[in-house]
Image (cartoon, rainbow, N blue to C red):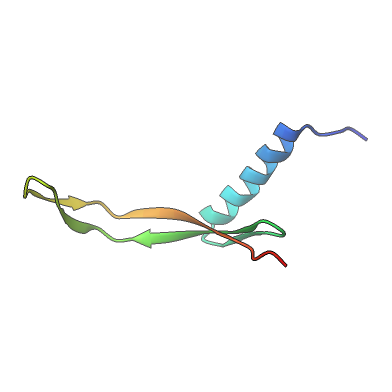
Length: 69
């Protein structure tokens, strides 16, 4: 049986989380936490100069750590 390296394990974990998020699902990693995507609609923002600009809509990845036992 072949050993996997730390880098291979991390890459595999990132790939699994990415695939779940792209499907619109949460990714729960036991002992670590949960990743989810949160949508933020476009919004007006006033700059310090007084100019108002529109921020585009975006998706944000949110991580919630599990509580320690």
